[in-house]
Length: 308
Image (cartoon, rainbow, N blue to C red; front, side, top):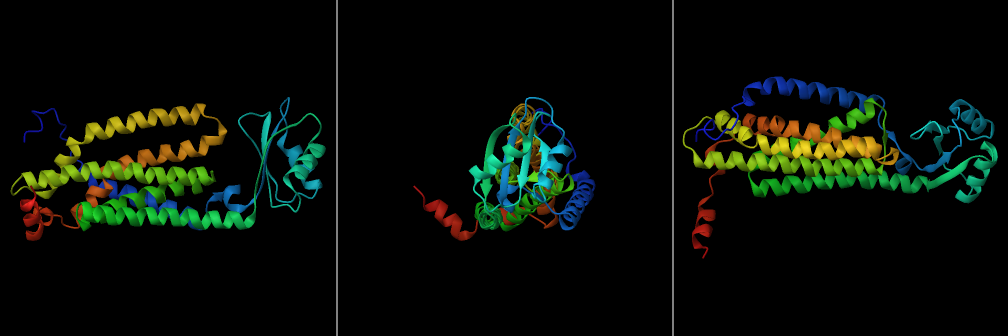
């Protein structure tokens, strides 16, 4: 098939895979180092405690709020602006009093001109359970994908897709760790969504690679994979760009509450698009995929022939 005649680009993705591998190794190494040394900045969903959003009529000095809470024996209180200098978020360690009494105490400490916008409480036991369940959810998702792709294609494709997904998850977590951006349940949900997005993109590429292998004879695997990547490039770009437009709108206009969620998706879509092109395809090429590996077995041929 003449790709030029069909206006298909002829970018040598496979020829540049060495640079891509080095780039990915550097990103993964930095991510793992950051995760090992400083870890993730877990939100109240995982650590337990109380989150209070407070509104002021005018700008407020964070240092004064911190000193006030410290004097009132609220040790380890985290205070930061939330969207503007008139609004702040206060994170407190688990308290022995109810949320209502805590809100009243905070108002008394900060003054009558403050407005308590919301109060969220998570017990330490619940936070621990959410941490464990969140990790298991990600693990189960990856195992399910491994099984699905192994049945849908071939075990090399399965390992290639899982390596790409692990690549995306580690780098996304690494960026959150490196920048110390709060990691909460919404970010975990975003990472699970990234896994689905990246897998969908990878499956499209894998499907075209298999079709090209089965429809050609005695063609170098590198050329077949390169051709498949170029043939699906326009679809990949259109999907990624339209998704990024929506995510950028959420990131800049959606407010502070979904800021981390949108950021995780932005990082995931960019890294996922990159991994679908370079990581997944490079992995199956390294493992030596051939046309014979994709041909149906004699038993499968007989089942196909016997279908009405």
